[in-house]
Length: 244
Image (cartoon, rainbow, N blue to C red; front, side, top):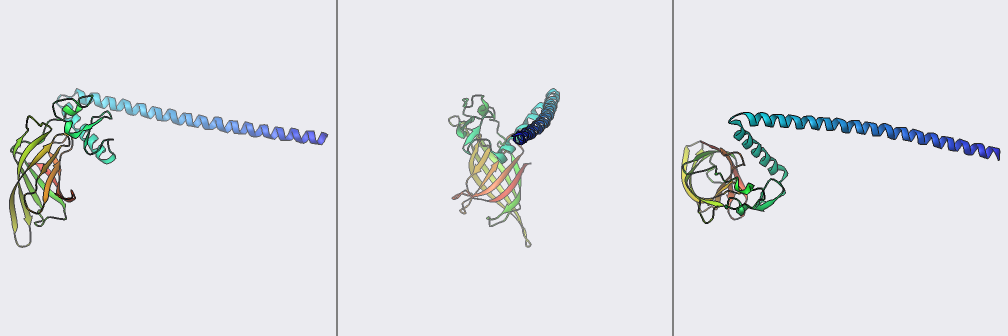
């Protein structure tokens, strides 16, 4: 009986030691986690302070606010293109999580609760503007132009449908070969969508190849152009356009 009692005491003592060791480990781990969280909080506070300081500096410089805001808007939209903004391709992101129909943008009435859909109505193009596009790749055109000069001949925004403007444009396609350099002149018509900042034109020839050019928000001097198959919507050639 005595041996049994001693054995029981030993087991209890060992169990208590294990519990004490486990408790010590938990306390140490908790302390480490708390220290890491405190460290992360300090870093976040420092980053927030730096951002606020930079914002104040930019806001305090005369003439810099507009450019800075434009750059920030541009970068935000580029991030949205990569990671998505929670809206479909036919919707406009208001900036606060709300999505509205793309055709409700710049119609003269606030569809976004914060009014953002009526604050992006400045057009990057107007009559007389010219853009020079350099080829990135071309898998479909017969002429294989190295350069396309895009000229906006007219730009009209109808009063009864303000979300899109009617555009007439002309192109000069410049191609280079071993035999000669050639320039081809074409004319087309189309529209500019304010909500999607997209210039879309109709095919100037019977090959059903149309040109589109997309402007990022905050950038009015460059657009990404695609030659698109009208029947399927396939993008088969790409050009990067810059304002001349």
